[in-house]
Length: 235
View 1 (cartoon, one colour):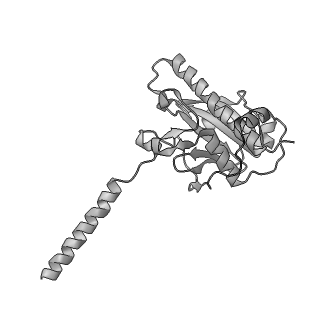
View 2 (tube, helix red, strand yellow):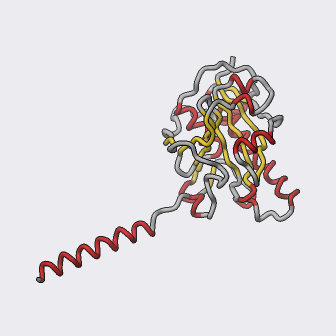
């Protein structure tokens, strides 16, 4: 009888420990701040793809990267490796201080308002910096639908920077909100430029994009697509 009671007590304690672990599951930096990495309007099409760590060996002195920073519009169709894509996304909007929930690009009042979409031949993916993953939200090749500028159809990937207004509710005045979204977007855009200079890739910041179409395509109802960057090896 004593052995039966002892085993029962051990089983109860083990079950309680498992339940406690589930309740105390560590949140990502964005989740800890009450932010959603994936917009509610987006329908996920597949399992998330875990990205490799950012490539080492791309380090370049800032002065050299600034000297090499340049706009390119003529791309080859050569594919980028997943390692390059991972490094590109991290440089644009990854967490450089994950323990603090802080990113490589600053934002007003640290609202971290952007969703970064990756356009490829296979589909459109959303970047989850906290989990270092991308997840398909739209199937198929929609690169040429970003803009009527022909280089989008040629470059192997493009990044779309979208301000998610749900995260900017602290700004009650629309003009103030839009001002800070535009300023913060500039930081992300320059990060993309500097990474491309370091990795010997080409890019161009494009504001002439098909916003209404992109909003419908991605289910954006409370936000705005601000800039797009085609990225690839330049001619």
